[in-house]
Image (cartoon, rainbow, N blue to C red; front, side, top):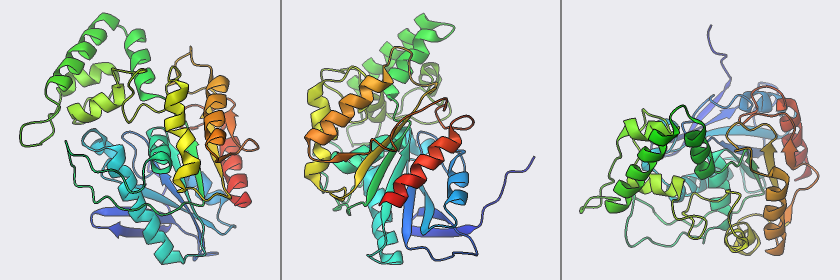
Length: 334
């Protein structure tokens, strides 16, 4: 069975980086833009609700851009949140130049793409220079967004832990985890600053893609072995993180000024997310994030946000219509 095709325009927003804009003959030139960022291993047409969302938005002034980053598909293991947000910033600026400064731009992330969204909003702008390791960052000033959405913001650390503990051979998984953490800490990169790549047969035992190269540096960021006391960059959504950590992340959104002060932050958590361990209290977790966000001076969307009942991680079945409806209502409020 062939996959559906979609009408649109492929934009090269930076060298070797592209975004696909869903278009329709009825409204070919729309002023407002929703940039969609997928999670680990995602790329074009891998998240099932994106095309239906674009279809629902056809009569409106909003078009959907599905973006490919260096980290897309199997590139996540040798990339970073810093590089992601710099590339997203280039896309935001490209769209503003393309559509005009009066157009609205909203950033939406799915799964680990939600980490990109929060990293875009809470990190210093521009990013601070890393004296230890540099993967080609230009340290750009990120443009202001008119809105931001996180969908399925699940902790990679907790998802990996849950996978290991519920696998057929948890002892082997724990052993692989300990060996990988030890090796990654011992040599995160070579003496000439080249990433050390971990054995893929072992990373696959943790539920990570077994066919994707994973650097020691990104592995330590994803599994964050020193959490919750000293969380790594990717550990933003774990249920055991302290209020201090939330203040450093969600609590910085208002002061950074990267989200338009008139806009609200929309968070959508899948009610039946298979990557969320059963011990996580989703409602309590969202409340913590909201409190930190509002304490920092930013606004939280309580009307459209919250738990999407019945939705799995990528909302491929039940809950998809509800998810799309919430996103559309949010965009209409901007």
